Length: 95
Image (cartoon, rainbow, N blue to C red; front, top):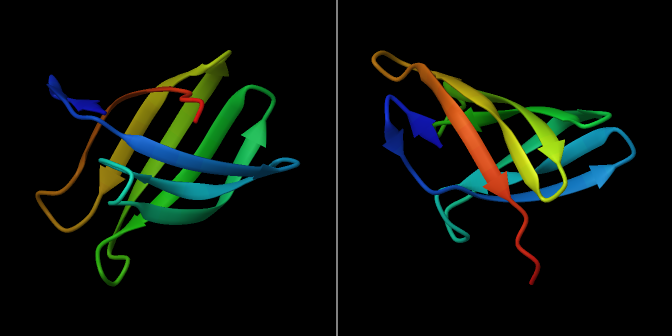
């Protein structure tokens, strides 16, 4: 993720069932925040990831899939000053 020229790694796990998307995202494989209720519309993905112990914030992600690459934007909100947006770029890793 890239917010204000501050690039950070991201690791995501996605599960698609028809046009429904669920999974998790975080800085690495062991630190993940789960989400449900995401949507797949053609090559576009949208999902919201609750943040904080009581879900007081969220990250809204909109991405476009192109082969093994996904690019888009994340917008996060929470208690001040925890709000902003940044670019997201993910690449499929085959295990």
